[in-house]
Image 1 (cartoon, rainbow, N blue to C red):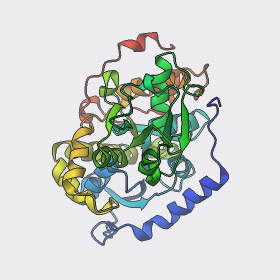
Image 2 (image 1 turned 90 degrees about the vertical axis):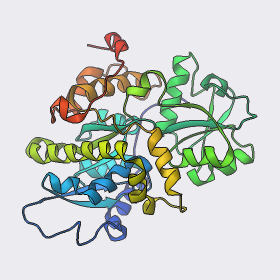
Image 3 (image 1 turned 30 degrees about the vertical axis):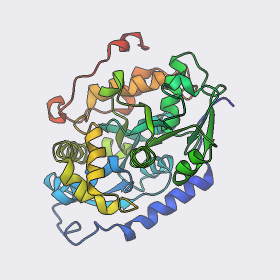
Amino acid sequence: MAFQQFSLSRRALLRGLGLFSAGVAVNPLLSSKVFADDKSLKTIKLAWGQTAVCQSPISVALKQGFFKKYGLNVEPVNFSGPTDALLQAIATGQADGGIGMALRWLKPLEQGFDVDLTVGTHGGCMRLLAPQNSGIRDVKDLVGKSVAVSDQASPIRNFFAIQLAKQGIDPDKQVNWLQYPPDLFGEALRKGEVQALATDDPQGWLLKKQHDLVEVDNNLKGEYASLTCCVLGLRGSLVRDDPATARAITQAIVDAQQWTAEHPEETAKIFQPFVPGSVAVEDIAAMLKEHTHSHHSTGVQLRKEVAVYIDELKKINVIRPDTDAQRFAEHYVPELLPAESAHQHASNMAHMSNMSS
């Protein structure tokens, strides 16, 4: 079936927003230290997918005082619902910001969600995995195979579908994407119901280790080594009406990302209590070292990266063919920080010259 327009189901949205509303009560970082009654600090609500290891820098920012350094009193809200519902929560003002995957968020932004992307937080958390004896060693080997995904609009599915399309393979007709709850991925593979897994961390890293799987592909190869996969989204009205606060949130996240890159073992210790299943600190640190938390692009650089993804999503019919990638990026990525403050890394963007003007 052709992969066409993205849409939020009402049930999924309400479920996600309900989990959002309930999140504050279960967040172990909501201590008197975090919520000090300091009238000099600006209070904001930051939605946080606590089980996502790639969001561990938020725990660092809270623990190490990065938010307070920039005059912020952050109320972290544990958001356990779908990330598209998280985007809706930000757009409607139930949260001031949150981190999610660009390949999940760009379609609803195209549809008009009022959220700005202010920093790309890192790359490297998407993995395509297969058993050692599967014969799958390249994405093209997925032709005729079944692949487990968390849902049909999954950003991980989108990423590997793009890689297939680049090789002239129709990802909708030549690969069978089967939806499973993430905790059943390993069982689906064991039963032979699927021959590969398209997943993200921490699940992907742990499944690879537990089942001795081959990492067929990931989003750190080639040009993707210098592209972000996750982004900080802030409420559009916040960016317009209070750019100083938007700038402070963004800079605190940049600082926390860089601290994570420089101190993966300490970050793992801070974040470990949030990871389900008693995952060892050493394993979390190993995951963090495979991610590119020192890559936190803003402004012009992030616009280039967003434009790349917009054009790539056109290849799998997620983004409309007439959407101008550069204009889209300029609209949704504000210029908040000086380039030097974001520790930006050089990116290989030679293919940008072929993009829409």
